[in-house]
Image (spheres, helix red, strand yellow):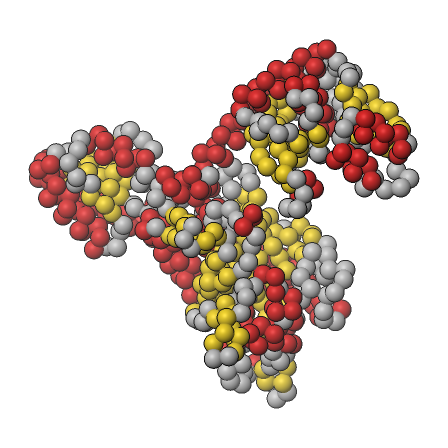
Length: 589
Ligand SMILES: [Zn+2]
Ligand SMILES: [Zn+2]
């Protein structure tokens, strides 16, 4: 056998993060040159590039970024060498004061005593920085400045707002191009952009930020998801429960939410001189059902599920479309079980999560989060038992676990799932958590085979996380091209000419009778425009019908992504539609 040689690798002279941080210096030096009097904040490398914060009166615009890029290129050619000088604290402050850099003077104070203080210089520009950097700025690399955003100095809302210029850099031109194409795709798929383009959802100033209004299109998709969700939960032995949105404050004292999560909760309202709160979590409600009567070991495990809407305070500055909101519906369920049942129950949850995530084509990584170093409640034995149950459950399913040492909640260990979307971005959505705390606080019990009262274990778990966040993620994952089974409108009926409307109406009625979501486009207008409109709305199928189709009982079927048209008996299309729906196929995703 010939020896297999590894593909030649172009060695990168410095790590990408070092390059990117160095380019942020280069950008700062260009800004200093073009905008005298500018003050500098911080300029680190970040996940996909770098940024630098500037205090500058004039707001930077797109043409400014191009101007800065040109200046960067000039400086890189003229003054390529990056040099490091070490100075003492006083000298550092003197230099920065002389340069008028007050933020940097403040930054010197946060360098711990005894650590070296260094400046990096290229040309006549220098910056307080610990490095590392590339040796020369005339090496072969490629960069682009991307956008400007506001950012508070040190992330503190009481401090000045600076201009943060984002950019990125790569060693190879093709990597930069691929990254820019990816960024463009991220913009095109932004769920807020698609949310208005496809008439999916809105928020309203009259109501306040962070509260989502689901328009008919997105509500139709949500109903399809909920049906899927309930189907899978019924198969997995869950029973539904419903609980109120408001409860007396004393409930949240017993649960501990008032002591530990008060900043997440909305202020109390008074009803008959008693304080009440809207719920931040569904757990206490499910616990009350558990406690409504005595429980025997014979009933366990109990698996109760609710699509429960909760309300939590988020600062207005962090609200973001459907991804960060103030009112949301958790796909919540709680399992009450014996310690012996725990591993099987967790394995069941992992199975369910796998089924749901793979239906949408998500890949995922599971992280086992173990006992935190401080403030954990519960004995060593109970932590070891539950952590072991989580491990065994993963092993039963053949699921690999990454370790998140000390990342568990104070009340128990958990497995968090990070999903990867179509653009390779990670989202944390599903979770399964053991809880030793709430059963204790609510004094939950069951009567065991030996007649003695024992404490059940409570498992909190979410498969989707919340409807809002999951669906927001889904919009971006599919770029609005949803699979047939959950598409807001599954088929558009398009008459070739006005006189074919009656046949289209007939087909529409037949499809609706089978509970398909369809729309006959019968308004006056050219067929081609209707096809274009249906494509713009990403409707999976267009059924075009004229005189011949009406006569023969057929339809000309066009798929969302192709130009070809296939004529088939209407019955054959019905079969296809039924099959795609029942199998919840990703076809036409
Ligand atoms: Zn630096
Ligand atoms: Zn819970």
